[in-house]
Image: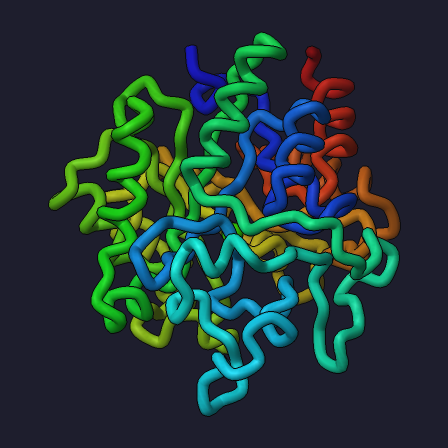
Length: 319
Ligand code: CA
C-alpha cells in the first residue's frame, strides 16, 4: 500500500533537507533521502525553452550568482527571471543558500552563502537521482511536486501543468500507483489537472494568506470556510495549509480546519516545520511536532529538518 494511504503521518522534505544544505540542490535531496523522508518536495518553474527546473522562486537572484554571470539580463524591476533564461543558461548558474535583502542570509544558522559548484536541477535529473537512490537504498521515497505560479507561466505562453506531466510520463510516474503528489496554490490549475489532463495523481490545494498576494485570483479566506472545503473536495485529495491557520489567533486553540478537512476526506499536510524558525510561539521543534501529530492528527508535514520529523514520528507511531 502506498505510504500516502497509511495511517502513519508522512515526512515531506521541504525543498530537500533545506535546513542543512542549500534548498533544491541535489545534495539537499540526497541528504533528505538518507534522513528517511517519505517524500521530497520539488518546486517547479520553467526555463525559456519550457524545461521544468527545480527551484522555488520565479526569480534567480535570491539563490544563484545570476547577477555576476549575466549582469545585463535583469528586467526593468531589477529582478532576474528564470523564464528569461534557457535551461542550458540556467545550468551555468551556481546555487547557494538563500539570501534576502543586502545579500544577508535568510536563515543565519544554516549553510553559509558560498559557491559549491551546485547547479539548478531539472525535474528529470531529480527523478533520476531519487529513482537511483530508491534502487541503491531499497526505498520508495516519493515525489511531492509543486507547480509554481501557473498564471505567470501561462501569461508567458507556457502550460506548466502539461510540461510537468510530460516529464513524469516519460518515467512512468503519471499513473495511479506512482508515488507522486501534485500541489499548487491555484485552484483552477488543480481542476485543470483533474478534469482536462485527467491526472490520476493525488492533488493538494495549498492555502496561503490573502495578504501575501500569492495569487490575486484566489480567495484563500473563503477556501478555508466550510463551503470552500466542499469546493476543494470536488477536485483535490488534500490541503496544504499554513501552520498558523490550524489555530485561532491565540495560537493555542485549534481552528476547525483539520476536523472539517478530514470530515470531507481531505488529507492535511501543513507547512513548514523549521527548527530554527518555530511557528505558533512554541519553544522546541518537538513541541511543534506534538501539536501537529498528537494534538491535531495531521496526515503529514512539510519539514526543513526531515531527520527531526522522522525521529519524532518513528518514536510515536512505530518504525
Ligand atoms: Ca513549495
